[in-house]
Image (tube, rainbow, N blue to C red; front, side, top):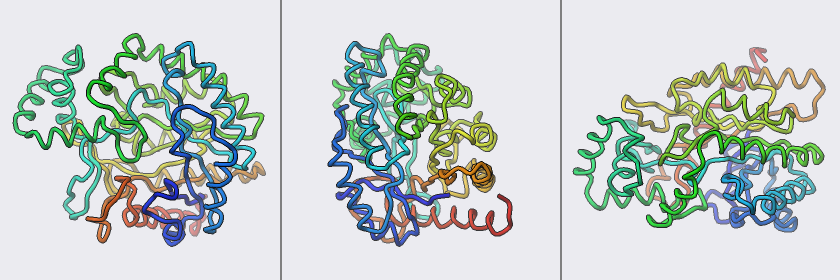
Length: 394
């Protein structure tokens, strides 16, 4: 597998020399300053590529071209934004970049309540506390009709939890949830967040799926013409938040997406951590089922807690059998090689490393994306890949 590393551009505190030192050869990046649906200018793309290649690396994957909200809600402006999206695909293809990751999560991107959860190892992980989230949703945000989404027991737990949080902790949770995780470009006040949610009052899972299918019918022919592979990232976490629909969460969701436009250009970003947050997802079985349409992989692990909370685990621990995941992916690579495909290698990256050692206390703009935790994760994952190669298992 192609060992890659997410890099947020020239302002990323993890510099490209450190990416090379971690052993990665490919970079996963995006033009994060253009997040409003406009076309990415070819000259900007080429400049980012130049910087990456000057460091001895390749720009292997774009993550992500944002999907404008008008496309998700199906508003009359969506044709303009989908045309701009197509132009960005064409510009990336002209620059020689052919793997594009994107997501279709409404309003919020990946979501955590705690960005520095102390582990028994004394490192720190990202964590989603289901009760803290409910307390915020029900009694701080006071979302309309929020009670309908929770059991009476969970409402009682959330109310009790709120009493013990304190104002400072509540403000911290709110910053993490709606004020914009540092690794995303979206930011809301409490009022603007309620307004954003209101845009989805008439959008349920059925409507959101229809809008995703429309989007795919528009962009996949362009991707085919340009030799580009589109790969959708699953919801994170893969269940409803704030009453919003989530439609990239299960194996059935993946089947719908791949069948909506049955083309090799319409594929998956398989994130073991996102799909793995649902106990009913059989991760190894999903990798085997969808192997031929997996174009990009995020490898991370999670531990699901008894109350529905979860935290980022060590890359080789948690609920996902990472060794068998990697084996299945490398067997798929072997199948592609036998077909004579030039694009047989699947790019992967270690995702959401723990905050460890000298990185603790450093100023960081991207929780989950510090250097040492991801370096450790990549080394562990590389060890499994090397063993699969040496023992001739793929």
